[in-house]
Image (cartoon, rainbow, N blue to C red; front, side):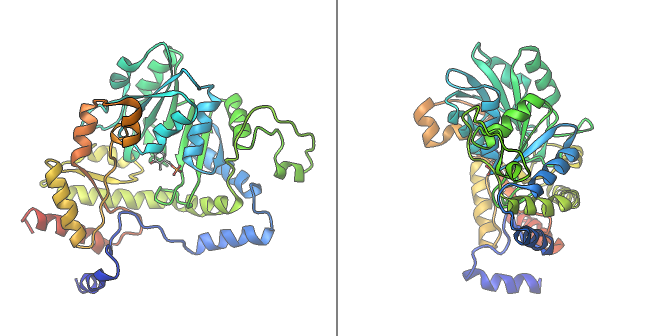
Length: 389
Ligand SMILES: *Cc1c(COP(=O)(O)O)cnc(C)c1O
């Protein structure tokens, strides 16, 4: 408790002493970065290639590429599938805006699907099927908070209809469903390595596919549509051609260095996340509700830890109460279809379950380096809020 009181004394200097996410660089990161600088090759090169091979093997039998962000990865995934003007792509609204923005980059139309339920705030075949039209070319599913739900059914039904499936696996690095890691249930999967994700490199992402043709397309789209990269030219390849309109979504070797250091800790860190989440759930179960089940937690990467309050008022009150205790919380997510920009283009869209869930959800602090006393402190403060301390 002395520790807490000391930290709270500094409250005026720093509003939150306990953040929702907290990522610090360690010795491993420093060593990997130094290695890149000493080798004097900083743009896309051998370290990225090595990471691509090892991370792909960790996910499954497909192949993948490091990209500058998951948003860039989603963009080129849609383009690699030939999606563009006049096409429709079914997406959740209960997600980070980038999932949906990426569809607009291609000039295709995003079509929002509702989540299945409060317990499973994820789009499923049941919520997607009545949104399908002749124009539907793809669906993007998000494994919310790291949880995977009925994605095999969605994959099967879409495949039967010739509709592509993209996994936005930004939350689910290392999540397992029916014995397979996420990334293996779709035509292309995209992982995010943004600062607050389970692999955290500042800005970065990964695209992954089992289809060799799509892999080649993604590789071209990542680097200007050019058939030979600088790194390959350096190694002796020479004849360059540009065969499609690509982008510059290449990562640097420094990104790859950070990705390696983080990847080496991934399973260990995911285990710690799981332990923290199970403790939270054990201690808070009589006070609040949770999405998913304890059983689901075991197979999840547990990117965030969301809880449900009774209603919006109780959620906002608790958020404010915890803020005054120095505890930061977040809302994952404000529904995408309710943002001004989306309302301007689509008008009023009604997604009953998404809106209900979003109004009472709150994410508590969760990161692998969280100390036991910090978890206890959050739990005690919530008990105090409910007067059961
Ligand atoms: C973080 C996130 C993204 C975007 O990732 P970036 O790497 O920051 O571009 C996309 N989708 C979801 C669901 C995310 O959480």
